[in-house]
Length: 409
Image 1 (cartoon, rainbow, N blue to C red):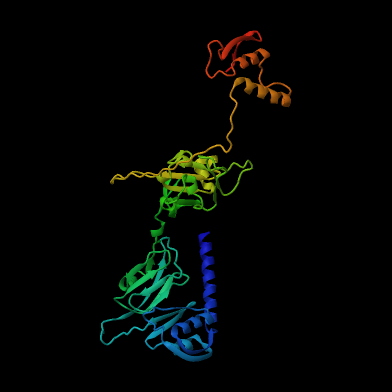
Image 2 (image 1 turned 90 degrees about the vertical axis):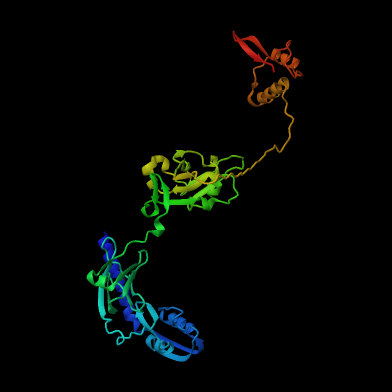
């Protein structure tokens, strides 16, 4: 599969290169410049030809004033007319590279021999690196590798150093004698940006080795958020994760949903593990959280089974460190009160009578099973704030053939 993919990619690049060569001679410029800076002239060439012009500002006089008229002029004619004599340029694919001319004094250094250098750039797997930059240090001499990763440099000094670089790989410097002995240059991947450690189900792992959809929220992202709960700190930090609150009750837990509702029952709560133990994220002090990893795809089911079908939230708390002890305080408080003040009836006679009255009208039978004697006893005790020994609140009576406790409080 990799060979087929590489072959297709090489064929695609070859087509692009051929298209660039065919359109090179057809690129022309039509414009009248009147005392305009060289920088504006080069931008106009880029606009009309679709080429990208690359140069160093300390090697090209951008402020040089140009007065010239071009009618269907080729790129070569335009650049030859506007550039100074101490610079040179070359066309490379869709780029025009302008550099300072280097003066080579061969007579003053007769021992400085020039060589033709060839090589091949590959990765650690031996696959060719296409489009890698090959540059001679201190000179304007350079090229890029072809579809097979090969390059050729002409008239290179024997003591020169060649730099090979490519995006995503570490830059490599090699001397010409070493390059002549072994024309094979191997580039290694630049893993500087892939060293971040991520907490996953099996432990910790570097981002370069991740195969699932994992979102990481560190303590720096969550700090300085004026919220009392950890779930509120997660709002807006993880794509495809919705944190909602159904009520404003103090201590009410949030509803967390990952990837939308994916169950006919509507229950789509993710599994929350705090240092490997299942728990409620809202019962955790937000200041104690070091990082939160959210496993969003089905690969987490290989670790946690069916409980991971709605996603997994892994919370890692902070650890102690060997340094000076610091103490911080973060306090919050809340209160609640009834919106309507009501004087509730607590006396037994009236409480039981009101319940029986309304329940009988609604259901055809009383709510309590109090008899007329029971109501007489309740009436006798209606004003007792404390229990009177002559009228105890609990008595024993024969009901349905057995002793039964009757409450008159």
